[in-house]
Length: 573
Image 1 (cartoon, rainbow, N blue to C red):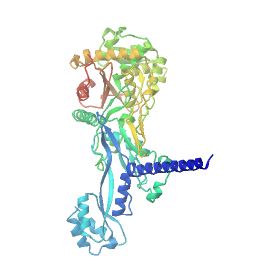
Image 2 (image 1 turned 90 degrees about the vertical axis):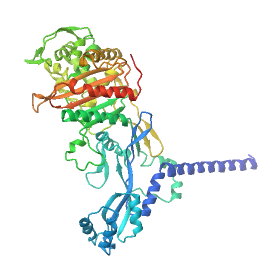
Image 3 (image 1 turned 135 degrees about the vertical axis):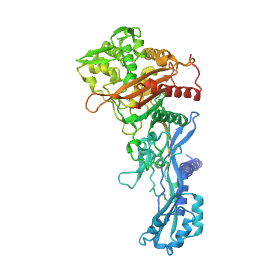
Image 4 (image 1 turned 180 degrees about the vertical axis):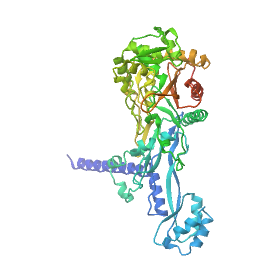
């Protein structure tokens, strides 16, 4: 190799090194100024205002509007904290006069704090606006200090409150962490290390990109939910109406895409204001019965029983039986809801008239062992894996019994206890071609590193009934709406809707059932043969009303019409 070639190689090597070095600097500047720019700006300002206190930091939670734009469900709000340093106060009266002209403060509390001569910090007021903080600063009051602060803020107040959750102190009372809902489930993603020490700017520049991406903050980010704020707000409104009209214990609802498992809305009433919940006396209002509660769901389970019967070729829509109004098994007698016999009827009438004896007939044709196997395949005895804390699993112990009566009652939704979310997942299989989906709320995570993760479980869905079964049970449930529900008055001329009501007796502690306490449930999906939405509603112990068709039909139809209009769904018939 000539001396000239050697020089050229050295120049190329040096030039390549300079390019790599420049790329490292540009990339690191991107992370410092773009990805983490807000953090640095806040911390720089905070050091100027008060160098001793850490600013609370946390990732954001977003709703997704129908056009794909994002709306904050949980974010941070900035303001200032005003405190006293009693060691520096010379004239407490003068300090109070000046501060009270700018802040609403209690004189008794103020003087009690100002008199603590051994203390260096006594909080006077927080969440103070920048304008007020500037006025206090301009007064130059000895012993008064201003600190910038941030706090968790929920722009939509109570909308989706039990699903979103909130931030509160942990069990030690020292750290703010996610409590309940998404705030808790995604704690590792949303939390921020507010004690992080930032080194010299140039030292940061020379930190390797690999370290920047794979550091202990690589899981930190913001979460984007599938919750649509307008849909969530409308669902919450309808739940409130039911709750107030019938004075129920609790009323809940879920709106889901039965094909993907993405949840558009998930709500409960009673609810609470995420920005002001300190006065709540009953902490159970923070729990989420949609994933934690166990209920005997009643006659909506007849749709699943019928689907199993169709899938196993045990019955067809035209199969008939002689309905005598009651059936005795293992010395116990079960009845139709009105104790009336129907004579010879087919399977369509079992759904249309919600016949308990008919559902038991279908189960008997399937066989106990096969029926139990299918019910477990529908995931009714397990957790769904939804991204919310404290999920419970169903209780299907009765399907291990040697007695026929247990299977017969299970066929119409009594004697087995299910969570609403597991029920919704199972019902979605009727709508989507027979697949068991994974319900979920978060569809994307935007990491602080600039990377992101789009979340989808469609490819993981398991086939549990044949596509043809899904189509046939859908046809039968459309007939329920077109012909039987409110005598067909809710049939929509241009849209097919598949639906079923459910009314269940509530079990007494120990054994037996109350004769005057009911759980009402309702589910439906539409457009029925290519569904965009499945809506599930339930209300516990509504007063002075007997059947779900009376309490939940109108709210369901209101929600259905709203979704058709809001999403401009094309007619399907």
